[in-house]
Length: 353
Image 1: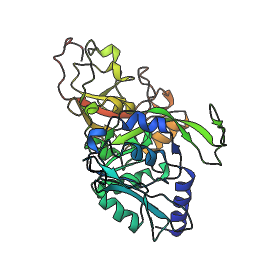
Image 2: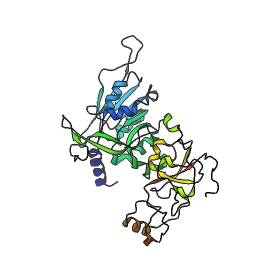
Image 3: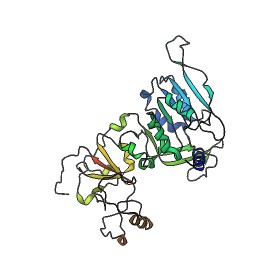
Image 4: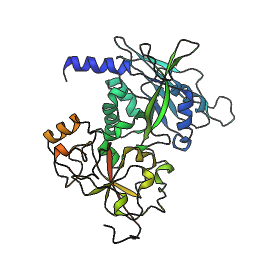
């Protein structure tokens, strides 16, 4: 990798450090208590001085019976430190878990970048990684967790579902949505953040911003992901569902409109991940990931360039007569996951094909 690219990535990693609010962390993590007993937790993008992730795990350390808590964070241009808390001997003789009063602080031979050799050694020691990683490095960050076979609960953007590096993991059921998905989250922002919308400065001079499309991702087998979507009352009728121009599939505008009796391919919004159940549906492909959907007619770059120049935002459908598409049922759509119902009900209206 070129030196300038490394420098740019380091700069981006520092610039998109959004500090997660206590309320957002508790709203998600309080669902996970049973997963953490006797586990070493690593927050590898967190400065304990500022991090609510660190503070959260310190608060629940005894009640959740953690084994150890580790934190490291990135600081450009200087060496950094790791922080750790762990259980100690039963000094009170009451049989309850005790932990050291103060964290152990150890100097690192690096600046705390999660990709450094020292931080990878701490990663190997851990069982579960929990943090808000830099969004600009989300692809690399998840790839590292997968490489070292780590459990995780992390924050990332909704659009990560359609990253070419992330989508195969979603499709293969190697990561999925947490309890809070596709929400607007409040963060404490970097000092150079430009206030907009509902953003404000608090009494301590900290900037607060609201970011839409934020998601918790995990590979812990939470019960949430095994709940079927109730499709009762939605039945396939041809006039209700439009087909794509170059794919034998129907377009679904909202998750609640998925027909319970359709056994073919369906394009659904990527936000379905909030309620996706792998026992109910199979993910076949993604409209934004090249070559992920089998048997799709290739439209060609010239077609796509013209389509986008005229305002198109999807790959599959359009209503521009100049492109030779005259069917008025074809319309522009946003990104879609292509799915199939694993156990559709018998077709109530079999003549509607």
